[in-house]
Image (cartoon, rainbow, N blue to C red; front, side, top):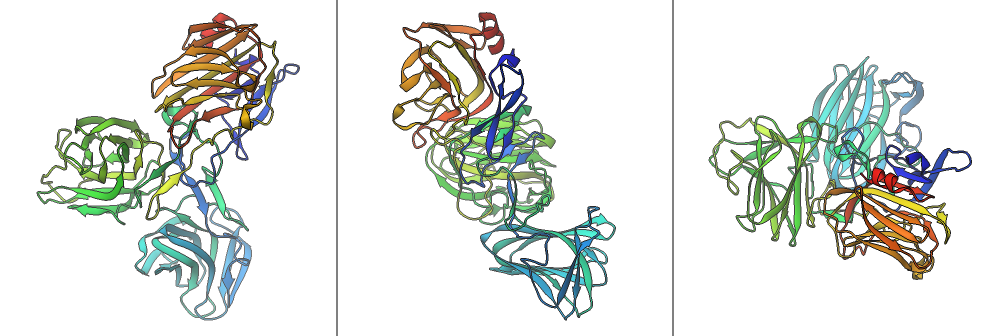
Length: 585
């Protein structure tokens, strides 16, 4: 049946290109498909994430250096010869030979970055030098010295250093990285000895976060990948692709992955980069307790108003029980068992508790506070039935569990993860601004044309008069608009100049997938929900209808709407009753 659609969006054909969401429009004469580009608006945004087709959290990534593998351009050198075309770590000829002609030489790049967590990494191989220094200069002068003969870090200094590492890649090549928490004005690779020394270098990278991720090439502009500006977020939570649409939210937890900076600790310790996170990189933290008869927790002060959602990713190690709590009342807590993702005791002031399973034993735990939340506690507890901020004695100081990605946001449910690498809050902008989701090549139905429109998706948190549908032209003043609206209390079809030509009752539940269909056959308009025809309407006059878009439309200051679009189909015919039931079942 789908091969009869004049427009297909989603299903097994999710794709995006150059910031546009691609649909597929059938040619009636040639019976083939070609791309139709839906303009997509999400704004300049590095805070959005999605779950990719591999089940991993995918972020915006950026190599903040310029000319990251062109060391004779942006890089400042003196007393150094650079020769390209050398055999690299990856089997290419993209490495560079760096030779010092004077004593204690370096090459550096100027950059201006405010305080935060950054990781500098580079691929190095020794020729005849003893040590190479990686130096990150800013609010601290953070430096590590690496012996390339054996791949060891011989020394490091600077208050900004969080961690450093050397990874042996074979054939004499190492990937060396240093992670800092500071502002940055320049980075430098330095010879620490007299003239006549040399080494190979390839693929330098400076990025936000605790871990060195896969290399991104940069040139005159920075290298970018992942969830880019204005890129539709095709989300595979649960294994099935859908277009994720969310309102703007702010993560009020600063240093949401670095559970040391600005976090208070009570009889616990944190080991950074202790395990592979739901992101697929080694940037999850190990939370351990002590043997003291006490509370065992870490805490972040992040005041929000009523209806605030707290969430964190967690995975068992030796310990399996974890508590999310706040301190406004003793009723603000909930316990989780990381053995099976089950929920234990819940305090009277916490609601909307949710456990979302990720790969490799990870869970995302979330809860909504019904009163103002003064603090966000992540606590180690002895059982699922433990009380609020339990006092207990652990058997040793080595057992613990893994955590990653804490979030505290205002709202009645937890949205997708918003990473924060520094102090203050970080805001993810809304996915669809009002009336900005315009299709370049609209599908036009005349006043006497039949058509069928199909939508599959879910709604999470329904605001007053929330609408979702296709056909919004975005023309101001109402002239020329055509809609299929799905609201929180009815399902409407509107035509030219917002003339309502049909309406049907619909009361969607949150977090529930629906298959919805509207069909016009002559003057009759039928509505279907999940295999059932719920309403038949008679039009007095047929009205032109144009499909120009698919997306949200809501007052962004009043209505906080979230949902997932799984599939949209447009047919230039009125499908049979059996076809409509089959398609929506």
